[in-house]
Amino acid sequence: AQYWPNKCSVELAILDSGRGFKSSLSGNPFLDKNMTDRAAVNYALLPGISGKMYKGKYQDPYDEWENSGFGLYMASEVCRNGGSFFVCTNTAGALLEKTQKENIELHTPCTAVRLRLYTNLISPTSQALPLYQKKGQAVAQKIRGANITASAASTMLTRDFI
Image 1 (tube, helix red, strand yellow):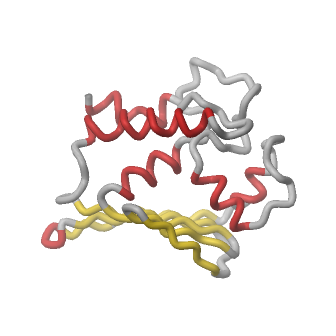
Image 2 (cartoon, one colour; image 1 turned 90 degrees about the vertical axis):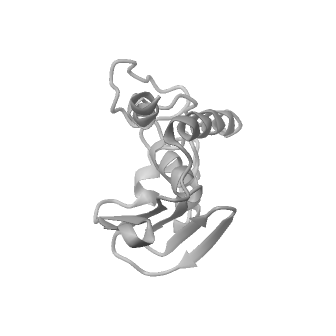
């Protein structure tokens, strides 16, 4: 993580050498088992898509950290509206900015996420997060097999800043 006050810029990068999106998402019976890395990146960015939680699977209402498939979606929305969001796994990546998405071919042995925020551009959190959550839940309702309820952890910032 790095903060550049003179540039009003914050950047956070996370590298994970685990299973990768394709393998992780293979646990979801609603998704194509032969998906490409590109498809896996696109699925992972959708709200309510997860290899561990999907329509019909029991969601523990008391487990605020249970995977709901909203984490990457919420993070990408925050970044898109005040910076940029990059995610990649194996041979595919996506760079998301305000109204653009660029698919990127690459070769990496890990999954990586980079969040970049310009502090002078981000919307007030108390206004923005509930909108992203509502939008995400509306989108998830249209996706076959998507979980439509964001976990408490995915909405925690909303509660903390309202």
